[in-house]
Image (tube, rainbow, N blue to C red; front, side):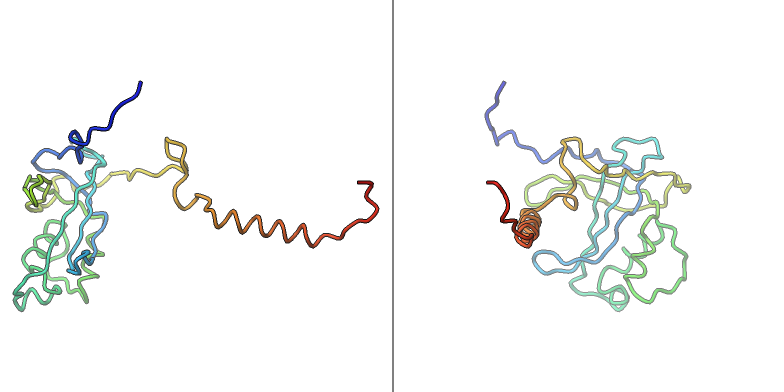
Length: 191
């Protein structure tokens, strides 16, 4: 049975319902957008050790630099000092701890559980998930198990790191040809 492309039915996936999700911070880093603007990027995984929907799903959060940063904002590279402190508080980082850099602070966030409030907002005419705020977790004991990538995915394709590239095949063929060409010729062959 065949089908016909109908791009009017194309969707970008289903939005997770608004509400609170128990998550782990799996990545926290400063990145640069395609337009050249620096931002803090957080990747969050919905915990599978808490009874909730969308377990192992991901949420993403971005903090942008302030257009007119205050002296406090400049301590955290121009991001909203209050927003950064609220994130640290929700993650249970020690109050009063000194950090040499924002990068050190972000590294300490990784692996910390928090509760994220998901809301839906509109950006460029599209509805999307956004995180309105973070709160301390209701489940501080973490038993979440990250999903592991199998060596081969269900479709039978190897992960990119294991795929043989055309250049690798050519190099192997050239090495084999060199090996063959360096073998001594035997003039006594009957054919």
